[in-house]
Each structure stands twice: as C-alpha cells, then as structure tokens.
Image (cartoon, rainbow, N blue to C red; front, side, top):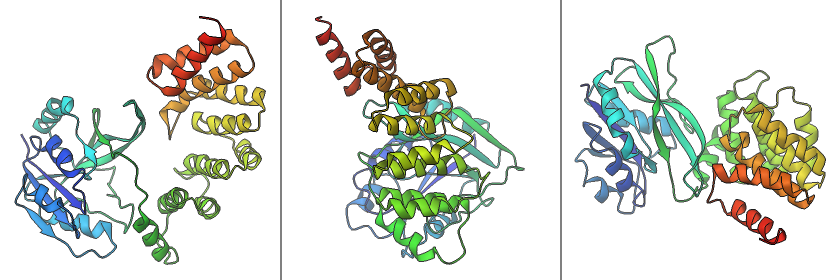
Length: 345
C-alpha cells in the first residue's frame, strides 16, 4: 500500500480543523500543517494530530503557501484538504482500497461544494486531490490550481467524495483584494476571469461582475457558467427583463440557465413563460452548476405556479415529485400543507 502525506494550509480554523483531521487521520500516513498566521487555537488543535506544524509568513499568495506545504511532505503521494472539508467515514474503506492500487500521477476525486440544509448534494466538481510527490506544483495567487497534464496517467474515482461543509459560507474579502491587486498585470485567463466574477458577485458588486464575466472568451470551457452567472447578476439586481433578454440570445441552454429564465418570468408574473422554462429544465436534464436545476427546483416551482393558477391536479403532481427528492424541504412541506388546506383534508 502506497503512503500519502496530507498537506494543509490554515489560518484561524479552530472551528473546523479538528472535525477535518478527525475525518481523515486514519487514511493518511503523515499530516503537514502550514499555519499562515493564526491568532486562535488552530495550532493547539493541530498538535493533537501531528508534530509537523510549520509557520509561514503570509504574502498574499495561496499557491506559494501550498507549495511550501508540499515541500515538507516525505511520502510518494500528497493529498490536500481545506480545514472546512470532511472525508465521510462511510468512504474510508473505499479510500484504503484505492491506496492499495495507487500508481497514477494524479487522482481526481469528486468534491461536493454545496450541501443544502437537508444534507443533499447540490453542486460538485472533480479536482486533482492526490498527486505524485514532485510531479506538480500549485499556480495562482488566488483560487489557486494544480495544472495537471492529462497526457500523464491518472484516474477518476466516482465513488469517493470529499465534502466542503462550512457551517456557513463566509465571504472572504482577501480573495477580492488579491484579485484587485493583480487585475491589471496581464495574468488573467478565462479561469481567473470566472473566479474574479464570482468573488465580485459574492460581494454584491454585480455591475463589475458582469463586465468581468463578459471578458471570458466564446467557446471557453467557462462559457456556460459565465452566461448563467451573468443572468444571476441581473436577477439579483431585480433586472428581470435584462436577464431574460440576455439569456434568450444564448444558443445553448442547459437546466441551470432554463431555471434562471424561468424564475425571472416568475418574478414578472408571466406564468406561462415560467412554466415553459421550468418544464424545459426538466427536459434538458443537464446541469453544470446546480444539480437541483434538473429536477427539484423545477418541480417545486411548477407546483407553486399551478397552486397560484388553481390547477390543483398539476400542482399536486409536481409537488409530490419535489417531495420525493427532498421530503424535509420547508417549501415543499408548506405548499403541500396549503394544498391539503384548500382541498379540505
């Protein structure tokens, strides 16, 4: 069985670090913690799990800090996590089985990036999570990435996933500050424009976010995401007509984009158009941002619209489908209770 070094960079993570390390300690063969300036109990917590703790003078460069952590690893393979990640216990045996057959230069593992209050996985991506030591380095001062070479040997593990599970999503002003520092240094490619736009959105600077997203090239791998988030920016500004006018011009409309168009028409009280686009989301059954856009979101909102239109048979049909997917969702429960009330049950 191959040995794996876990390498992490942390700062003021007393809220999450013990949960993270407890979830992964039996899977890895050493734990490297690089602290970038904590003032809370982060280091004391880390000492419960490892003696390999290093201080790093923060220089507004995430890739440099992560590469420093990699440099301290001694084993053939390196895995990385963030402090608010969790490795679910039910997957431990799968992971250990993977270690027995580890030969590739890198391994991609599913990363669940958003979980709803009912524990349902809403958004996910695949990331190079385990790499052969010395083969790759991190790049990028912010939203750093390991630029793997797909001509090298690699594997993708569908059955193993890591969950990003903070108690709440924290807007990180440092990310935006770094983006603003490097914005005019000709260091931006489509990936950086995408992440910069997302940070601007999170900070509710929707106008600039739209301008940044529009810099992403046509036919880029980020084009569908760009279009989705531009629509979302207009939506959050309550510019529902601008959102629909923009999105309707897009030739490719997946379930995510159909749902944005539909919710804009819902806000405009154009119920027929909203119904059409939510039904289109169900037919497309293809998402890149939010898995719920393929099923739960259209079922729920079609149920709501048909309640408004007093078409109770259709309302019940769609709401029951939503209930099958998320039975404890508050909106599903409330709409079905309302349905029962008006039906006199």
